[in-house]
Length: 74
Image 1 (cartoon, one colour):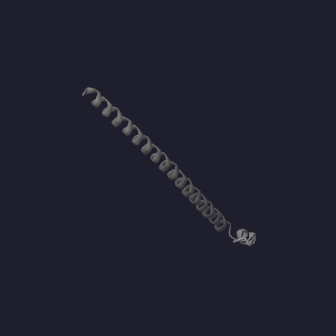
Image 2 (image 1 turned 120 degrees about the horizontal axis):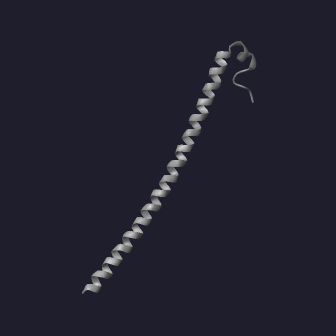
Image 3 (image 1 turned 90 degrees about the vertical axis):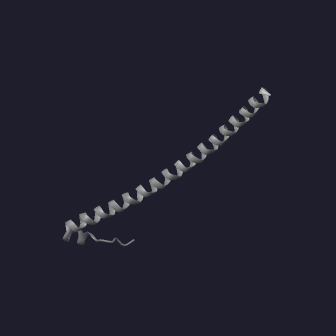
């Protein structure tokens, strides 16, 4: 694999070399941060779906309980 910048070019212009490495590091960190955010969003979506399912189950149980209580009053 060919390197984007050779050592000779780094030696001729150390400031440019440092800026190039900093740019590469920032790009990598941005990519990593995006992946972390996407996985966090997916995890939270899964939790929301589970919470909605649980709320629906509890609501159905409450309705059933209230219907039984109303039936027993008659």
